[in-house]
Image 1 (cartoon, rainbow, N blue to C red):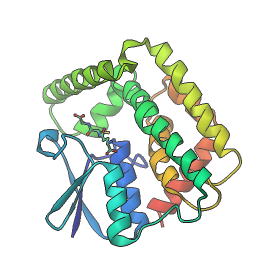
Image 2: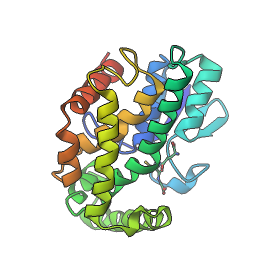
Image 3: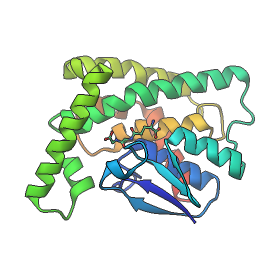
Image 4: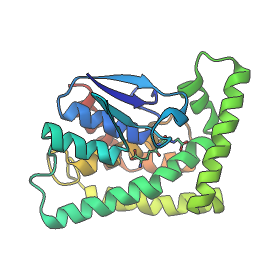
Length: 233
Ligand SMILES: N[C@@H](CCC(=O)N[C@@H](CS)C(=O)NCC(=O)O)C(=O)O
């Protein structure tokens, strides 16, 4: 049995980790049965992060390596109809989303003061307030340190959101009126990008960046379409 080490979500936020959400979507698109285990202690994971896929005795860390494994072992190939040029665009857009816009999503939830209530509910529901506050403070320090290292954490909230508006515009403009980034079929790019955009749109907080993402009607419809196709069917 395949096992996905992941984080819980809330409603149509399928995981509070967009990378784990992507991995789950890939498993579903591959038509595979799997179970999920929620990770409380990242230090137990091979690279200190989720998602991790366990396949027999093998642990595969990182959503990108999970995607490669699903292709190599189970034949999942979402990009077979893409041209070389489309693959290059996919690569650039997903890197932008996963290495930049993702961090804005982290900012949205952990640093913007409006984010905390969502995290407390999504991640620590059922815990005592004292324990939840303690873990939140630890996670916030951890992400602040990571964002300092990345560089994005050195900017003000408004500056970070200013950068993010450009990422959101690029994705929205490229999507245009299409169903998915490259037409009517879900491609790997959609699986990588939707969880990051959806995390901004669907996290129930009214931050400036959430409002901006929600103002893009094509992105809102895109996220709903993807969720219906992958998680509801
Ligand atoms: N490149 C990795 C990124 C995974 C990642 O950043 N996961 C975050 C959750 S969204 C994590 O586990 N963070 C824990 C930590 O850094 O302590 C992937 O695609 O799987």
